[in-house]
Image (tube, rainbow, N blue to C red; front, side):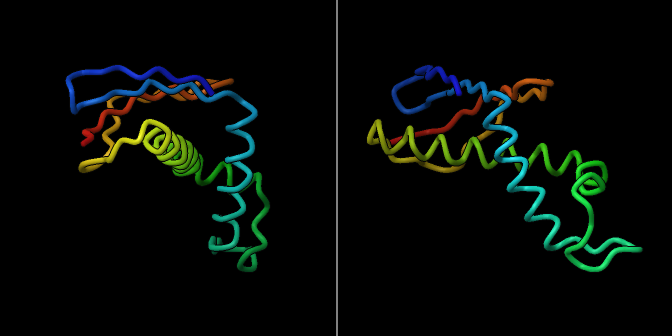
Length: 111
């Protein structure tokens, strides 16, 4: 993962993230397994839907969950490392899903 922190003003920060394939694949496996345990699709017993069908049927949700999980984990680490306290929510400004990486930019306010 690569990231860049931008100071928009003394209390408003922006972080640009770039997540690479290895991180994405690990998170994708976790997300697919989570969906697999909960998914009930016609013709399959609960929890027995093949991962390929899960990936095809829930592609958009999987991408959103992967990006959300990666952002959440890394923003928490950065806040802790910088000793910042988050005020409000982390807001997505931009996100892009590419073949080998995900890019996202988030903004938030701190104390």
